[in-house]
Length: 283
Image (cartoon, rainbow, N blue to C red; front, side):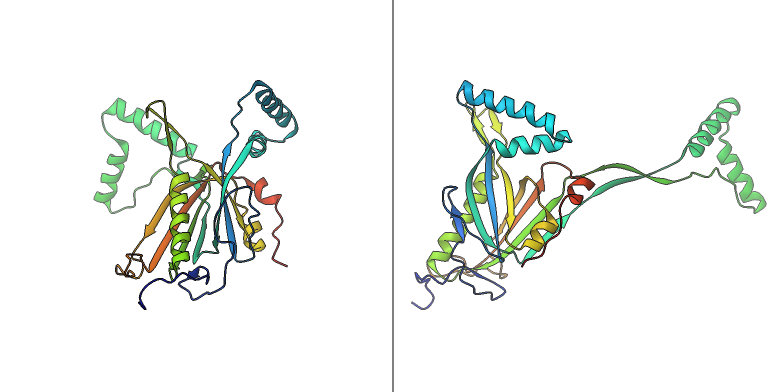
């Protein structure tokens, strides 16, 4: 039938009519030669090594001690240790998304200066002695006389309260045209959900944290500019009716999907993280 998905090798298509044949798209085991180009992204699923014997555990401990002695900061030392003692579980390869965003949030709070705090303390003392709030008395007098009431300058200023780990959002609008594409897309979605979920231990009484991720963008300009550090998945959103209705082939396969993955770095990065990376465009 014309409305059936045919088994072909046309590759994965996106809704923006980009028809390039991505030979390397899909989920690949770490021992495979995973390739990418200027238009693809590799999402590496990682986990810490399981030290099963005393010798390997000792080597891991020595690595920790030596790294803290060499690195300039504890954060850099931890990142180095985690990287050196991690295994790649799988590589998920996708084209550059239809939507890609980065969010860097700094906390600033509007607060009052010492002058305002001193004035508030003095006002409280006067009210304690007289039983009358001096601010109310001054305000009422100003209303009766038609003058402008004076107040202690609050000396507002912005006080830094911290920086949150960066957040990233990747969104793909995918058009399924073949059975091979359907298999690839649904396997990718399944792996994102699998490795972003916790695991149950000890008779389901304990949860272990989900895996963390390394994101390698084939476009060198984007890769160096964003410089995404070790991250975790915070959300996996799948819209199975991305065209606005549940449009399916006769075998029940949706024709249009929208996949949105949210990531967050495991730590807040600093000025130093940006300064040590040179932004380099694709050659």
